[in-house]
Image (cartoon, rainbow over all chains, first blue to last red; front, side, top):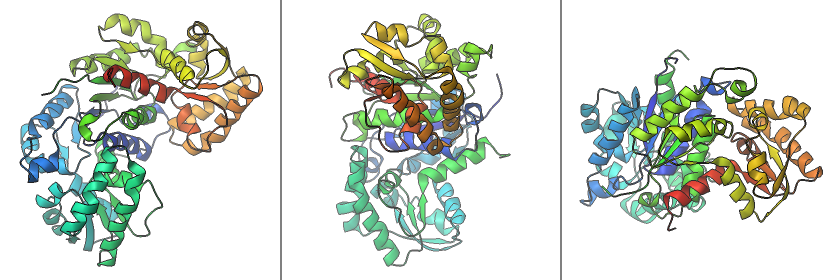
Length: 235
Length: 235
């Protein structure tokens, strides 16, 4: 059997984001037949306790569930791990310390995506969960790459962003477009040059309506591109 | 950790069909939050040798590759197997004999889908790979459920259907719509009351254009519904 790098995908957070990641991984891979595509295993366990609740409201710790998926992907022979859930990256360090497999960091992928969009620094809008904002997952990492982050107000987070993310998780995707697009537009109006969709549910909602007329860094696509670069370094 | 039925998905044949299966499984599941969705593991190995070539042209046997995926899904704790590739069902019996896990048969799911569409018998069009047609995967099973199968001509298979399937596998989805829709229309004109999309690449192409004005049994959705019925028998 031929040698190939097998990508492990720790998904299910939410499940539609994980499935869409697999679809984008496929569509962004240069291929002319099945056998040109990247072998990959998606561990989709939507039972992982809510990451934002764990971070800001004392909810159940997701780490044991994340570790179970990681061990399953190791056992299946994967050579690297991608996690299409931004908030789960709050547990990146304990996961990376517990495995010899490289974990591709979604924030580094997002920064690369901003570069690919032609931005080399300045202010960018950041849409993410309250958990991701509270743990400052993006701010120091993007600052190190020359970007300042502008985030929605607390009232916008509670009244618009978090309910819209919940709509996607409840399969009510099209309803989430208008409120998510409105927040993205407000961040641009306040001075952002681009908007980072720093929660993998948000690009699903944003894809359900007309394209936004400013640069948008989709973290599903960003992580898919980073995964392809790992799997096919020569391509 | 809570008890739940974990679905094993033997995918990658092609990879876009497997990823889209995961997406449809998610969207068709009644859910109001992540934790309501079905735990599932997608084994996406696009290196499995071409199933049609193995069946009709003496190509490499895919069974060892299929068995490797099956063993991986068993080891991961799955309770049943879904295979979103019709032609791979030509190896259904040796796979089912080799595992204690139930494998959900895609042709039974397709027959249930015809019933759901309101058809209780009569002539249906069958679009599938040359491998699936040559092994008569559908005909006896649908006949047992009261359906006769009308298939494209050999010239239509060689000149239109197989090249269109290859377009999907090469990520040229939108180009496959017109030729696939044309064959579906011809089968209806020849007397079929509905068309079974009996290759999981075909619904991907058919989804890339306007909806067809007659009943269509999509085997990705059919297998997703069968999987949900297995995972959530009470729902």
